[in-house]
Image 1: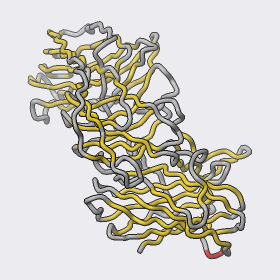
Image 2: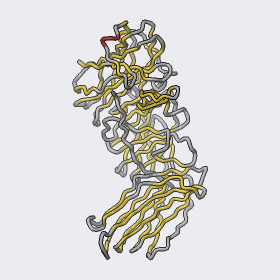
Image 3: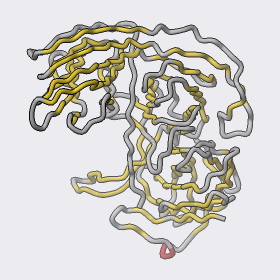
Image 4: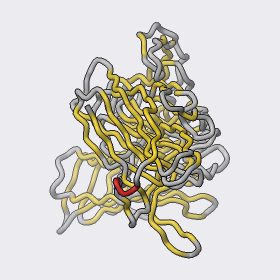
Length: 453
């Protein structure tokens, strides 16, 4: 049974304009100074760019290159304290993230430690509490930096208090608290953006259509990604409800397909009874997305393009026997959807995938498939199969017990920076004896098969 392993990706982002901040110190003994740095947004500079593959078709496209200097406001708070302190910023229309660097420690008692926590308050109400970090001051190598993994985005519709609390026990500590604020930027398709002045995280917005997949490529390779379409317009975090991160075997960020529909496994209630199963749900509507890239690269390039009409059951074609189409090429792909109509159930669907790779052939790759009925429930699924990279053809078998319209939901990845794509062909829809396939009663699905040659 395919299980979902979600690797949560963390991220950073932050701001130049529209930021109000105020500093408040707690009732602790501390000496401190504060500096504020700005970076200005430079005009985008078009430059020639080499060819980049942006669609599942073999057509080569040239992207216009644009230089983007990330607009940041960096607040540095130098401190010397044996108790601790509290820092409060009032933020609107910004993403915020912090670092705390310990530069010197004088131990004054047993078990010396420093703790740091984050809290976000909107209208005097706690709306978010970040991870709590505790540092053993006896064992660290100086200088030592706490890199918080909790970014938050406060939209222009509300104001929030960004509160960092530091407590120090049995030690006198000298260091620096750095808070980064970034104004979100908006990127577009079919352009190569050269990002300059990255501080670890970049948040940007892009328009999207639920009918299309989004192909994102990053160079040099490295980092993580999360896509979010928040329900609330005020506070956005990596834990917002409508979010997606790559699942399964995930490598460093190279090229990735961002889906509109996602398959989830778990429990759901039918007539008051809990039932296990899988279902396909729409994670992103046509309404604009926030994408966050976490990367240690100070400079890197990002390109975005759309894979048309393979993102939703409403737009994807209904495959006929013998028909074929190109699927996107990337290192990590989730959410390719294809429709198929069954009128001779019980039937076996045979989908042929002919591999295509770029310059680097992967050592191995994974392919997974689910068959979803018109109610959105998974009725057939394949086991996880590791396929040798030199394989030229993959055969996917799924089972439909009843007649009707079905959607095939496909995922594939290489687990590395190498890329894989396919030319998909519907080989057959043939009546079968269901006894030749296994049925998983616990999850309520017919067990399909994957073969390779």
